[in-house]
Amino acid sequence: MFRKRNFFYGEHLIGNAYMVGEISLYQLIMFPLYVIFNHTAVVDVLNTVYLFFMAGFGFFTYYDWFYKRKGEPVDIIICIAAVVINIALAAVSAEPLMILIYQIKTTIFGE
Image (cartoon, rainbow, N blue to C red):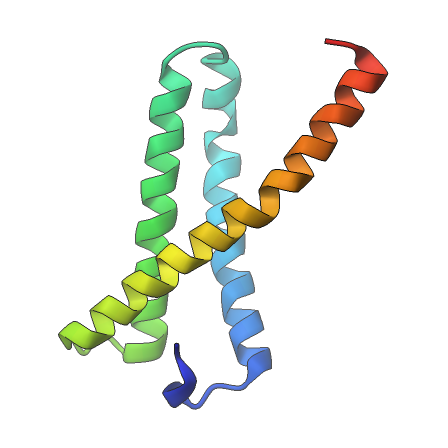
């Protein structure tokens, strides 16, 4: 999607690593709220806020990094598509891992 931007593969890896690191820092900051409001409806609100933060920060990062905030509509659409694909790939790849972790946990500790 960003082939015309003249960045090497390593630069893409480093840029995405910084983005994931900053998103993870936000999640670490919000972790005490998850512990305090465990098993309540507030957790759903926190998850929604986190999803919107992750999508918004991803969009801003791609838009700032690749397009230097020029504001062309095609650039905005490409950045939105990249964020949607990124979130979808993360969700699809994390699901089997979460199932495996849950099975190990229930085997060791019971339900």
